[in-house]
Length: 139
Image (cartoon, rainbow, N blue to C red; front, top):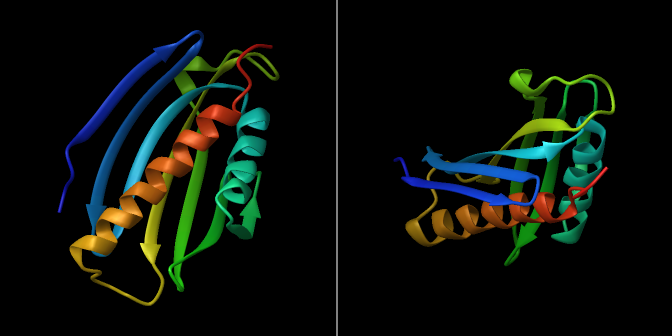
């Protein structure tokens, strides 16, 4: 199942583009956020904490982190991937942009019902919005 949600917003120097897709029990969204990889790595970790989740594994070098968020007594796994946007490679520490992908799924459930799919979609959307808010606006 594919959800056709696309969003582009410009706010100061922050550029955001998002897409939502769902497949076999999970929801995936992608966004591009202006900033350095280091700053957005910290924003991604902080956003997980803001949602009451915990990081269960991470690798800054690989640009990946896996978190768990408890929702109504059920666990939701959130897999996050950060990659530098190659078209914006301006050198170490110089503002560019980072592609962030987030995939969430209900732990132990392969095909959640529509209500859970909608909850999972909102979780991914909220997570990416928190990353965007935590991203430094100026350097």
